[in-house]
Image: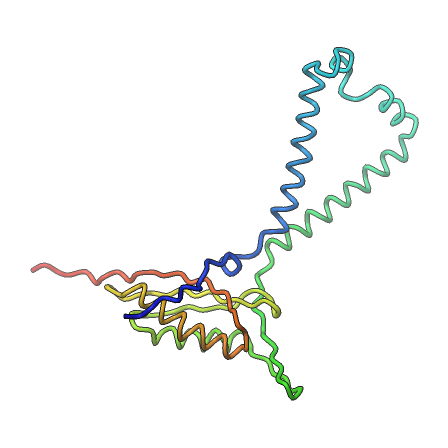
Length: 204
């Protein structure tokens, strides 16, 4: 009986593009807006005094300062608007940019070096994966960076395939061979299984 590697742990890295930066930025923005809303609610409810609750939203002193410094205020507001537009365009382009398919550089103890292209490694892994018992076809692509490459595999399984056996053979042979080719102890991989539909039977 094939034994599944007990050291395998779920990895979020290869599942999709890292969203850590976007989540952090949106989290900070949400906290700032939440704090501003909570402060407005506290002041408006009169918890800090009826005088503050009855004051206009824009402090008269602030309105007076803006009126006295109209040109610098408008220049600063325009500069801030330009910065926000640039940041928004950069963020949009970053989100729409296709994810890279890194080539992996290798080096040996003698100082020699070589590079395994993402296409070559993906083709080799696909060829090995399609030899696994129960797999009818496979799609493989590299993702991540040169320092932290990972694999994404989409496998079509034959009807009645032993999924646990397929998973064990992938980990013990296909992925292990890829790890040895890269000289890496770990190679995160996201594997998606899809069961082939059985051919329809005609009733006569």
